[in-house]
Figure 1 (cartoon, rainbow, N blue to C red):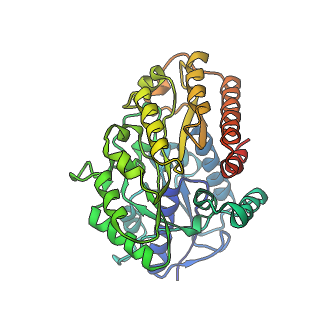
Figure 2: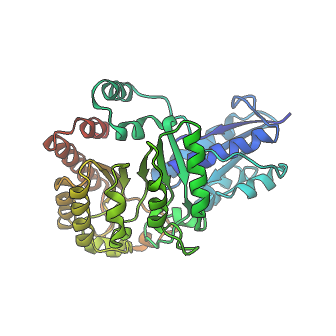
Length: 391
């Protein structure tokens, strides 16, 4: 019986779920999961979203290659083989590389054509003291679904509605890693009902870009969410990675007015229209800001998360101040901050006026304190507990 070890940490939710899918595929083909020093095959599920992640995984792969025993093989799948394959092969030309295609991996490992299980949940990495403390406070006093969503991943049932992205963002390598493909609405609903029957009550609508769902098959995210919300079950939804361009459609207001939706991530990336245009982000920030204010009035309990990139090439202090102003406006409950990093396969790599590391760090810190101050101003203990972890 062949054996494997899977490193499935340090990636986004979509990749972790894909890693679990690969794991289930191997187990159903009679492979046994063992420790890294005993396995025949060591697998890495990898991320390359930012340079720091790319370097982290290259280091781990290199370390595993040095430590591997005679007869052991190494394989890397996920995003890194599509964006930095040559760097992996510099470590060793014997390392197998795969992307985010389950059929490709099955074929490469000579696995039988069996019906593999699709994972919809995964166990979060070991909890820190602060995470345990926050969960305890939530259990005793707050009962806030957003804390469960952020910190108790094994209680979330992920509905993967599509993969890939239709965007053309100048800084992004993720869109190079897989083609855009949506599930059918009827299939997503069937998966939802399956999750509910097995005891889940918190569901995450998961995709690289949920706003783009269905555009490849004449369906859309608004019809999908309307169908899910029609069920009279006590289930609640979080929507991941909803591109702000989706706020242009007025149907979003009806969807987000539902009390069943408790969390949504809307990555604006910057508050400066000049920077957004350079990023090739397809929306007007003023319209997005107005839409978010309206949504907050309609459903004031809805938690809105966003992503911000600081230090994009050409970002002036005035550009940054525009971003800071939006964060201080209390529209967002949580902000995930990324410092811009160059990648040779992106358009932004060739842009002039790069921002130095000290400036990027300073801006990131100022944003972190701005969102923390916002949670204090709004007297939201749950937001404060989640945000203070980033300080």
